[in-house]
Image: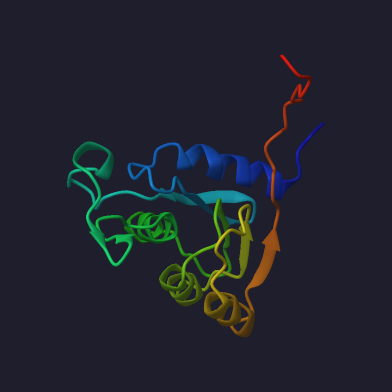
Length: 153
């Protein structure tokens, strides 16, 4: 069956997440305008610096401060390559943190599609709603394989 546009772009975001260099959370983001990808991003160290996967995490107050989040990397890639983000959709594998939320709002993202609602920040949710960003949650977009729960299997 042909996937919806939301499922299609979310599957791409899931593939982008596989490039993540911070194994604490593998997150992928895809920016789309008029059904065309304008940028992608995944979480990892700033360009040219060592990766968390290689040298360990730089933790401060429970957060890895070395990591640039997927949404921010996607916005940066759009800027570097001259792609306007105004009125774009953002497909991201996890609900964005508060800082990424503010970046998405200022980048004029009009629609946020996310697949994992784990740790939804109420302030981020409030900001997105008040900014008029359309929110769509499509959990479990990957095809599920049947699981045999028969004892001894």
